[in-house]
Image 1 (cartoon, rainbow, N blue to C red):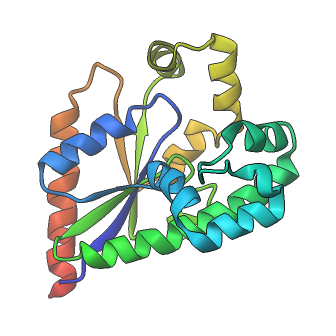
Image 2: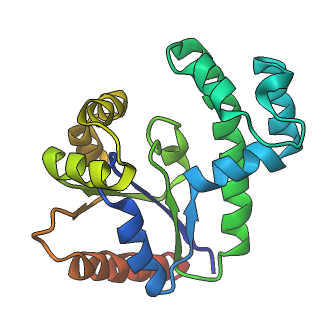
Length: 203
């Protein structure tokens, strides 16, 4: 069996993780790209070397931990530096994700969850894309509650991401996580469709 590779994304506060947990209950393996990126930045020798060369030895502490404050100071207000960092991290995550998919391919499909699925270009490797959506104000309130931050900070993060409307237009499947429509029936419908699609591909 060759499992389909399905990407799942959505803007900050859309509730991607909640949706992914439902898929996991259905037995679907989920690769959390953002979490894995943080692990690779302290475990992948090639990535570590690349970060050291681009941002200095002080990018890591003496005990090998990532110096997040140092990196944040460099990339936060300099888009060219952020692009350099993303240019190191995104390929490492893409390679790691493919290896993970190969290990989990004895299922109809796997899910790759990533906030920057389109921005990083990894959508090109996916067979289908699911986009989780929610009204902007709902998303803002969720992040305020989750991150204990300010409204201005949340809106600034939102404005740096691809507009939700554009993600919706490019999606193969939409999941409305607006606290009105029930999530489980939406997930089940997509799960059944993808399972059938995988079986028909084998035939």
